[in-house]
Image (cartoon, rainbow, N blue to C red; front, top):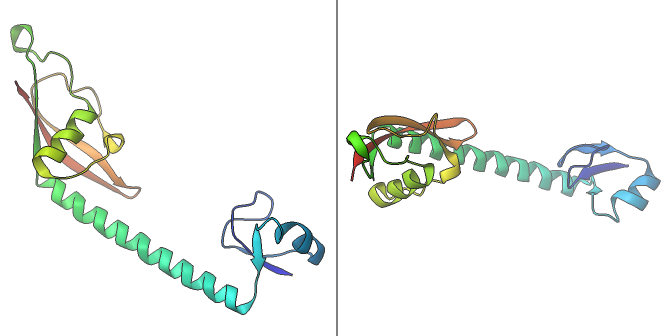
Length: 148
């Protein structure tokens, strides 16, 4: 019996795969536990449509991430921190502060977990930081650390 898997199953395959299973195994295990459905022509067509829709959505997300990366390359954010003795920065700038500054100054909602800081920003100046917008797209944002 041909089965379309509805979820990843360790010994059978991944979600969306069409597998061949014995009739008893399919009737007694796969179908009652809703691990898969019988591979009828209607179910196969639904699977094809779902895969096409998923591919379209993934491409739209990739295009949006590329557009945002191009937009970020042209922009900069200023973060102000206190100065300590001798004109040095008192503390460091965190990704949370950068995300808050980007929301306030640029109106962009950037997740702080996606901001990649190579090292702590402890000195005043200008830094180019990376932001992981998509698994395939990394944008750059200029961050200026200024004295408060």
